[in-house]
Image 1: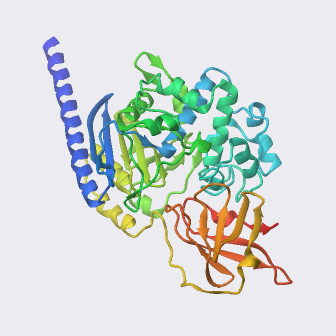
Image 2 (image 1 turned 60 degrees about the vertical axis):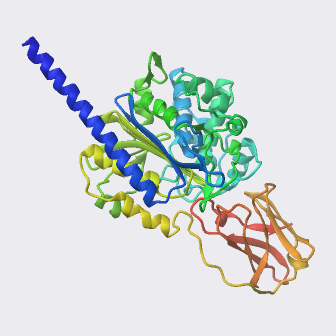
Image 3 (image 1 turned 135 degrees about the vertical axis):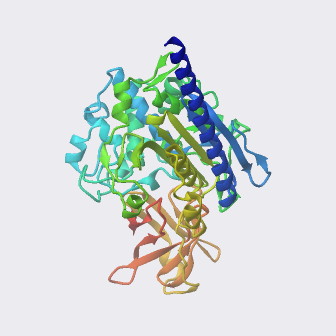
Length: 493
């Protein structure tokens, strides 16, 4: 009987090893195929199984201009993968009894204010991380993107924007609320968000190539450059979006991070989070709509946790979060029941990370029903990542440069200026360097803008007239999925 137990244990170990080896082989095969199909600039892919990295490989270049190769330890700005770090930071403070999930935000952050007084009074700590504050996805993001507004100014200005839905009524992805959560962390810990994440998470997990410090990231010679339309873009400082974005890390470090979650908050001899806190964070807090197409592909339940997204894919349940910034798309997917995780970091704007993640899920299930790489390729080819539009050709304006020149103010965003430089008419929104453009007449009271920020498509500024025919304001039509110019309504000072 004793020998039979030994044989049985050996069989289990061998079958486990074979299963892991097969998954790694499948991920490598699909990663290579996806890299070639999407004509990817660069990517790093890592696979974790039962606490061990069974596959890690870098593809392509960090910078297409100087052809610097990516490697496993290349640092990426990982965008919204940062949100789980913010949720974990709140979880650590909950474990230390510095606050609780059901505490009112104003009891810890008295300056917190939203458009509706009732919502302000009843907003809980967990609501900051749950994506159900009554706004559309990405509402308010223009306040931190390419701006120099402080956290205080961002929150003050956001409070002037009316919600689109009822409080806790429906899902709406919110970066702004994670910025507010970072403020709570700073108030309750006495550390900046950057210091807290670095010392309480990254240092504990031995994430030695990770940082929250932009200057430290810039000083690192082994970093990925974002690529917009296959051309390298400058690294951008998103410090005023901390809490929502702000983490810079590598694929190996993210697998250390993933392993902590897969082990219910434990990393080696350290307990970063209590098991109950991990469960609370990775539980469903806001239901999300599931399209018929997703149902056809095996997903019937989808929800937002706190800094994570949860869904079923056939008989597999995943905990994941993606990230996207100009020139960067990334994804981290955990499969708790399999003790497995896949990280895909790219410095390009294709759907490579999601195609490969779905191929990984199918491999875990022992299936190969859908060619996700072929299915997702046309979406990148058709430009759906950025949703550009065709604009009419140049035409004479009804207005003179003198009539449109002036200072304009939007109650929510702030100031914009229209001024002349020689014969040119210049538009500048805010005080940053990116929202600047020549105004090119397109007929009637319409002008085309093309911002220095190449991530954004061209748009149209339409000036409005008062009853006397004088210019009294303008709106901006710049359709894109990330930043909502339609919320802006500038009035001439």
